[in-house]
Amino acid sequence: MTLKNIPILQAAIWQKIAFVLLCFLPFFQLRGRAIADFIISFIAIVFLLHCDFKKHASCLQRGWFPYAMLLWGLIVASSILDGSLQSTLAALAIVRYFVFAKALEEWLLASRPQQQFLGATVTLAGLWVLSQCWEQYLFGANIWGYPRWADGALTGPFFAPRAGPALMVIMFPGLMVYPMRMVQERALGKKLLALALMSFLLLSMVIIGQRMPALLVFLGFFICAVLVRTTRLAVALSILAGVVGLALLPVLSPPAYNKLVLHFVEQMGSFAHSSYGQLYIRALNMLHAHPLLGLGFDGFRRHCAEPAYFYGVPQFAPFMLGQDPAAGCNIHPHNIYLEIATLSGLSGLFVFVCLVLYWLRTVLRAALTTTALMPSMLFITLCMLFWPLASTSSLFTERTAGWVFLMLGWGLALARTTTRSTGTGTGTGTGTGTGTL
Image (cartoon, rainbow, N blue to C red; front, top):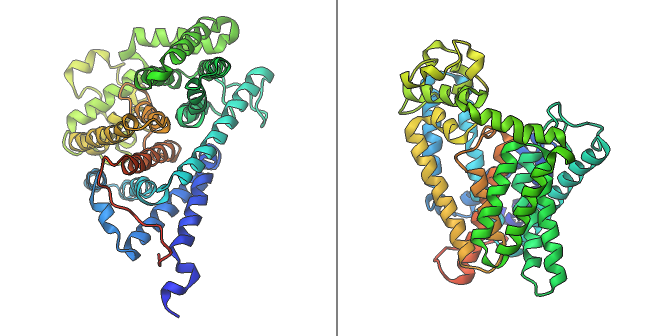
């Protein structure tokens, strides 16, 4: 008996295991981040083994992946130079996210049925978040007994205000895609039902009461109206319904109104002196002091209290609130571009921006060359995730990275299959045979 005849070494078996785990990933992203991290790491490792045994390592040498490895190398080098062993080990570990996205693009989502099945699981996860938000709104607590957060935000199935970011990511590929398809039907009843569903989804984001996810979903609706011509009227009317819902917030949800409107206006009126403004200024001071390679992984948290970064850029000095480290310190800068800049300097930021533009162009090209809606939905999602003028969680924490690289890999896989079906590219197949792993 040869090695390739041993069942445990059959590539198809490992691919099926990895795909089953992938379909559970959206649920563990909501509850069970340690398991979600294990799934991502497992898929990344099995994919590398697949590339080795199948002599398919060439897929790691083309497209965006070499530039992702360059970014990873810069982060690792910066962490080593900063002298922190813990940061260096953490920097080494983030490679799993890039490999995970490549595995989805090249191997795990190579067929339409696989992509559709993943879409169904994302939809179920979205319905779970949505139902828990409304249960909490209508009855005062979610299924676990948790009430609203102290500032009035709905927490959905979580104990803390995390429902907004999760629903934002799921919104278009998991929920909006269905009314968007209904809008394209000729029956007037289906069009009206689709309009009601779109309005309900947007109103749900408003009711949740988290500013940035709500703003980004409004942005997503705008991009949707521009990108998908056949749905422009329905999307425009649903945006109008969302604006009406925002105007009625003092009645519908006074806590959400206080946070979404009153606190937002107050914060924007003096942004430089707000908590976010102080974080951004501190990050820019750090970048000014270390422009080439930054401060390595977790460098912002470890160095933000150092006096050298209080007034690094003289022009920012009038906006710094004294010499209180807490005014500009947190575990990360709350913006992914500033985070990359503090991780790896301007060199890493340049590579990251090029990567984002490459990813967006690839998925947008697929959206424009097919009548299928899912590439457009994923392009909109990536636009929201990589929107530069946004306060965000840290990119390389599992809660954020799991969603970002799941949507990225899914979008790139769709772009790959769309290119093949329309004959607009010359991509090479990955093969899904039953050879050894």
